[in-house]
Image (tube, rainbow, N blue to C red; front, side, top):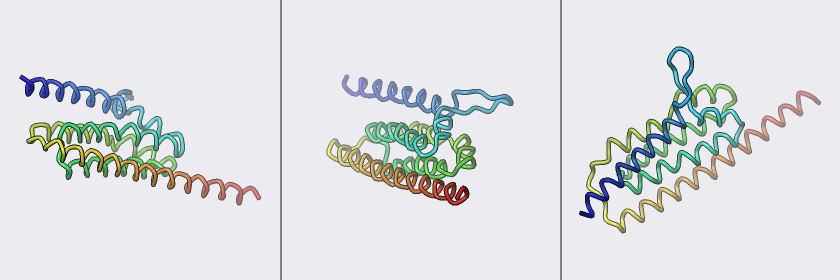
Length: 163
Protein backbone atom coordinates (compact mmCIF):
# COMPACT_ATOMS: atom_id res chain seq x y z
CA UNK A 1 0.00 0.00 0.00
CA UNK A 2 2.82 2.42 0.82
CA UNK A 3 4.36 1.68 -2.57
CA UNK A 4 1.25 2.82 -4.47
CA UNK A 5 1.18 6.04 -2.44
CA UNK A 6 4.82 6.68 -3.35
CA UNK A 7 4.03 6.13 -7.04
CA UNK A 8 1.05 8.48 -6.78
CA UNK A 9 3.16 11.14 -5.03
CA UNK A 10 5.92 10.75 -7.63
CA UNK A 11 3.49 11.18 -10.51
CA UNK A 12 1.90 14.18 -8.83
CA UNK A 13 5.35 15.74 -8.37
CA UNK A 14 6.19 15.00 -12.01
CA UNK A 15 3.02 16.81 -13.12
CA UNK A 16 4.03 19.77 -10.92
CA UNK A 17 7.47 19.83 -12.53
CA UNK A 18 5.91 19.64 -16.01
CA UNK A 19 3.69 22.65 -15.26
CA UNK A 20 6.63 24.62 -13.86
CA UNK A 21 8.85 23.83 -16.86
CA UNK A 22 6.10 24.84 -19.31
CA UNK A 23 5.60 28.11 -17.39
CA UNK A 24 9.33 28.82 -17.46
CA UNK A 25 10.05 27.75 -21.05
CA UNK A 26 6.93 27.75 -23.24
CA UNK A 27 3.95 29.50 -21.65
CA UNK A 28 3.82 32.53 -23.99
CA UNK A 29 2.76 31.86 -27.59
CA UNK A 30 4.33 33.98 -30.33
CA UNK A 31 3.20 34.45 -33.93
CA UNK A 32 4.32 31.55 -36.08
CA UNK A 33 3.69 28.92 -33.43
CA UNK A 34 6.90 29.48 -31.42
CA UNK A 35 6.61 29.68 -27.66
CA UNK A 36 8.76 31.36 -25.04
CA UNK A 37 8.53 31.36 -21.26
CA UNK A 38 9.12 33.49 -18.21
CA UNK A 39 12.68 32.19 -17.75
CA UNK A 40 13.65 33.98 -20.97
CA UNK A 41 11.74 37.10 -19.92
CA UNK A 42 13.54 37.13 -16.55
CA UNK A 43 16.83 36.70 -18.41
CA UNK A 44 16.34 40.11 -19.99
CA UNK A 45 17.23 41.66 -16.61
CA UNK A 46 21.06 41.72 -16.70
CA UNK A 47 22.69 39.35 -14.22
CA UNK A 48 19.84 39.10 -11.75
CA UNK A 49 17.34 37.59 -14.19
CA UNK A 50 19.56 34.69 -15.18
CA UNK A 51 20.52 34.09 -11.57
CA UNK A 52 16.87 34.02 -10.50
CA UNK A 53 16.07 31.70 -13.41
CA UNK A 54 18.87 29.34 -12.32
CA UNK A 55 17.56 29.34 -8.74
CA UNK A 56 14.05 28.41 -9.90
CA UNK A 57 15.45 25.80 -12.31
CA UNK A 58 17.39 24.29 -9.41
CA UNK A 59 14.10 23.31 -7.81
CA UNK A 60 13.50 20.89 -10.68
CA UNK A 61 16.93 19.33 -10.13
CA UNK A 62 16.41 19.01 -6.39
CA UNK A 63 13.03 17.35 -6.92
CA UNK A 64 14.56 15.03 -9.53
CA UNK A 65 17.10 13.98 -6.92
CA UNK A 66 14.32 13.29 -4.44
CA UNK A 67 12.49 11.24 -7.10
CA UNK A 68 15.55 8.98 -7.43
CA UNK A 69 16.91 10.20 -10.78
CA UNK A 70 20.44 8.74 -11.21
CA UNK A 71 23.45 10.95 -10.46
CA UNK A 72 24.72 11.04 -14.06
CA UNK A 73 21.32 12.34 -15.21
CA UNK A 74 21.35 14.94 -12.43
CA UNK A 75 24.77 16.03 -13.70
CA UNK A 76 23.29 16.52 -17.19
CA UNK A 77 20.46 18.52 -15.68
CA UNK A 78 22.91 20.75 -13.80
CA UNK A 79 24.85 21.26 -17.03
CA UNK A 80 21.64 22.26 -18.85
CA UNK A 81 20.91 24.93 -16.23
CA UNK A 82 24.53 26.10 -16.14
CA UNK A 83 24.63 26.53 -19.94
CA UNK A 84 21.31 28.38 -19.80
CA UNK A 85 22.52 30.72 -17.05
CA UNK A 86 26.05 31.40 -18.27
CA UNK A 87 25.21 31.95 -21.95
CA UNK A 88 22.21 34.00 -20.82
CA UNK A 89 24.60 36.52 -19.27
CA UNK A 90 25.77 37.63 -22.72
CA UNK A 91 23.70 40.71 -23.59
CA UNK A 92 21.08 40.19 -26.33
CA UNK A 93 22.61 37.05 -27.89
CA UNK A 94 22.37 35.24 -24.56
CA UNK A 95 18.74 36.25 -24.26
CA UNK A 96 17.95 34.88 -27.72
CA UNK A 97 19.77 31.66 -26.80
CA UNK A 98 17.78 31.46 -23.57
CA UNK A 99 14.48 31.52 -25.48
CA UNK A 100 15.60 28.56 -27.57
CA UNK A 101 17.57 26.39 -25.12
CA UNK A 102 14.61 25.58 -22.81
CA UNK A 103 16.67 23.90 -20.09
CA UNK A 104 13.66 23.25 -17.86
CA UNK A 105 11.72 21.34 -20.52
CA UNK A 106 14.89 19.35 -21.26
CA UNK A 107 15.35 18.56 -17.59
CA UNK A 108 11.77 17.46 -17.00
CA UNK A 109 12.03 15.20 -20.05
CA UNK A 110 15.10 13.63 -18.40
CA UNK A 111 13.12 13.16 -15.17
CA UNK A 112 10.26 11.51 -17.09
CA UNK A 113 12.64 9.17 -18.89
CA UNK A 114 14.22 8.09 -15.61
CA UNK A 115 11.18 7.80 -13.32
CA UNK A 116 10.96 4.00 -13.53
CA UNK A 117 14.48 3.34 -12.26
CA UNK A 118 15.02 1.39 -9.07
CA UNK A 119 15.03 3.76 -6.11
CA UNK A 120 18.20 4.34 -4.10
CA UNK A 121 18.49 3.54 -0.43
CA UNK A 122 17.57 6.37 1.96
CA UNK A 123 21.20 7.03 2.97
CA UNK A 124 22.40 7.21 -0.63
CA UNK A 125 19.41 9.36 -1.55
CA UNK A 126 20.15 11.80 1.27
CA UNK A 127 23.85 12.04 0.36
CA UNK A 128 23.01 12.56 -3.30
CA UNK A 129 20.42 15.20 -2.41
CA UNK A 130 22.97 17.20 -0.41
CA UNK A 131 25.61 16.75 -3.10
CA UNK A 132 23.21 18.18 -5.68
CA UNK A 133 22.27 21.06 -3.36
CA UNK A 134 25.96 21.79 -2.74
CA UNK A 135 26.79 21.74 -6.46
CA UNK A 136 23.85 24.01 -7.20
CA UNK A 137 24.89 26.48 -4.50
CA UNK A 138 28.47 26.46 -5.79
CA UNK A 139 27.22 26.99 -9.34
CA UNK A 140 24.96 29.84 -8.26
CA UNK A 141 27.80 31.49 -6.37
CA UNK A 142 29.98 31.26 -9.48
CA UNK A 143 27.14 32.60 -11.58
CA UNK A 144 26.70 35.57 -9.25
CA UNK A 145 30.45 36.27 -9.41
CA UNK A 146 30.38 36.05 -13.19
CA UNK A 147 27.37 38.39 -13.35
CA UNK A 148 29.16 40.85 -11.06
CA UNK A 149 32.26 40.68 -13.26
CA UNK A 150 30.22 41.25 -16.46
CA UNK A 151 28.41 44.22 -14.90
CA UNK A 152 31.72 45.75 -13.75
CA UNK A 153 33.15 45.23 -17.22
CA UNK A 154 30.13 46.90 -18.85
CA UNK A 155 30.25 49.82 -16.40
CA UNK A 156 33.97 50.24 -17.13
CA UNK A 157 33.31 50.26 -20.86
CA UNK A 158 30.54 52.86 -20.48
CA UNK A 159 32.76 55.05 -18.28
CA UNK A 160 35.65 54.77 -20.75
CA UNK A 161 33.40 55.66 -23.66
CA UNK A 162 31.92 58.69 -21.90
CA UNK A 163 35.17 59.97 -20.37
